[in-house]
Length: 42
Image (tube, rainbow, N blue to C red; front, side, top):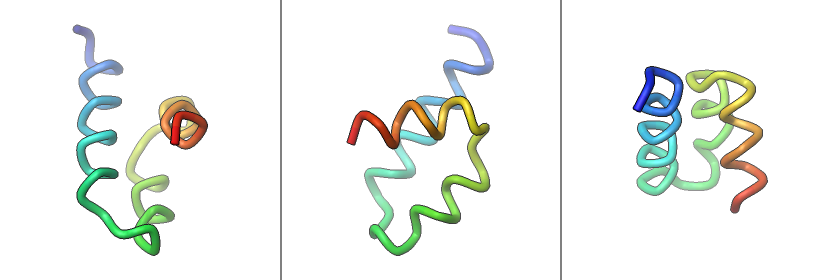
């Protein structure tokens, strides 16, 4: 898996352990492309 995919999975893992109120902070840490992906998968 490449760096982008690894970062994507790390972001997904963080999402699972965060409260909804923290999602904005996760969006700042993750690249826009991947942020859009996991937000649409919710």
